[in-house]
Length: 230
Image (cartoon, rainbow, N blue to C red; front, top):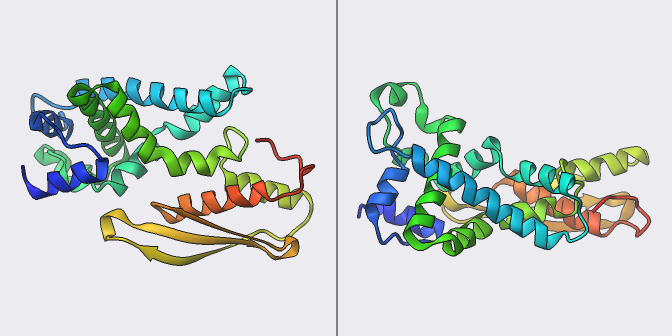
């Protein structure tokens, strides 16, 4: 198997027994048949089930409607495309000539579909349990970032609204350092609220996710009667 695909397997945390499944997952319909559309269908279901189980276990008191909104905040085209970009899937996609010329390898819809297809391929290659483990690993920082926030809002928004409601300055976010290779970076960000003497650190695969993790930690340090929905 080509080295770029092996590197992708390492980033995913799964070595394929069937390399043809990996290749198919990276094949857009514009390239030909077989393509990743059926794997995308399967991966979509696996993703929703794995994330649903995770948040169901994590929030035993949360009603069904809020669980649905929470899941939608995690499983959507924007989030999946972001993860696909972090995994450097784009350069490995097999696209037709037209899609190549129009930047299909960077289009969010194509990246999100390919990510779903990869999860579907892992499920076929090694079973649902393994696919669920991969989903957990890839979404762990995102679950942390939204865990302290009201469903439908990320932790940065929740923290900002709480401070604004009390006419307090907004938090300062500073990137302290960036580690790792270009395709697998880890951002370390500090969140500081000087007026409350709160300083937290967050890390994640993107600056935005690291800021959310830091904000979630800051929310956890607010007074117990702060009125922030968890």
